Image 1 (tube, rainbow, N blue to C red):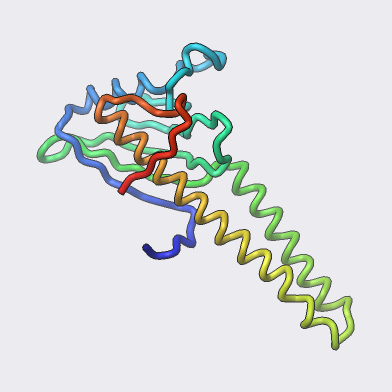
Image 2: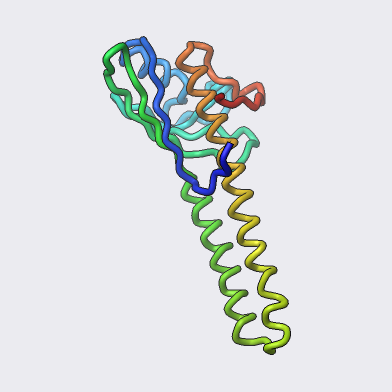
Length: 174
């Protein structure tokens, strides 16, 4: 497995089910807008919306990772059934947080470059650079894991099994 260094994923799933049935299965897993959390959310894997042949969902957090991806997809008629074109990316708040954190680390490098003595300048610069690399790689790995979980949940929904969000299961696609 290659080290994932980006925060974008694209998948394509094929199923013999008709497009209308797939839309119905997805809508069953998404609570209606304005539904307070509680009974109607039990066992649901996703929150978001599914309209017509498109959907925008994210995993129901339920005390899971905030790196759960935003899942955008289209349901298309294929030659031997239906295909789902799925794109995953980080949530807006995750992008904002990482941007601020990486900007802060870049600012630290600039301060160290211009405000420290020549002898100590290059001794301390690897610290914020190392933190930036560590943050990026750790975030990408967690995001990859959560993408696999979301893809596994979508596959379970398409198999008619529903989601496992209520059980706290950690699944993944192979």
